[in-house]
Image (cartoon, rainbow, N blue to C red; front, side, top):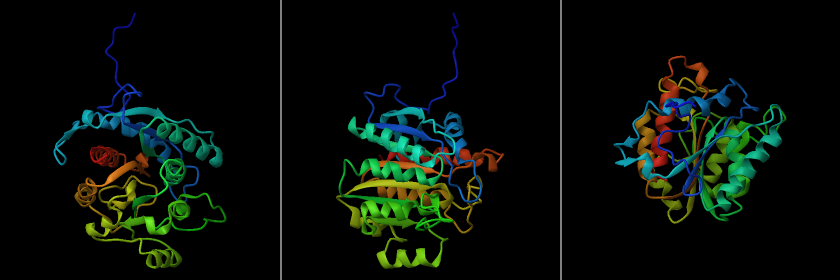
Length: 278
């Protein structure tokens, strides 16, 4: 009989018991519609391993991960090449999480995984808002004739929650039509106080890691210069701490494009800090 000890492949600080947890971390290793550099499907596994290089205490929020009470459910397994079935699997599993009275914390994978999460959440909350951190607008109707694309995820989300319930932060790239959409619906914001319209509402937070500058986060599918520094992103998290967050995800780490492992370490710390405000 083996006596170990053995390495833990779950996220540091997780509650091993699903039933008594409040939040369920769900790995979403899907990158079937990536338009530039694929590889984000490898992120959830690498992030879990990197989490053991973190402290479980956040000095920013004066809180330990154990106080968050989250359970790491592991990675979903997707049928390669079948986007629609993969999205259906995400929606079904996230729906089960909310049926059980819990909240989801998704780890992508590409940004399209957010859409089935939002679809599932919308079955339980009829009036909620989405706070979107990203370098890109993600407001296309389609990409190269395909409507199910990570380039279109927030446009699809807007049809579920309404454009008035979306705020976008860090955007610096997109087509003119997408910028026109943001101007028309006033989704793009620059000041913390512009989030105050969502006070009293339920909030879903989605973080595309390319919101960070490539000097901080080179390991992503579509790096875009001119982005945030890490502490700028954490400043937004500090402000969001006082909002009612009912779900979140962190997406678009492509770990193999940064052989140093720094991007994965940054992604892991982003996740830790976002968990602290849920």
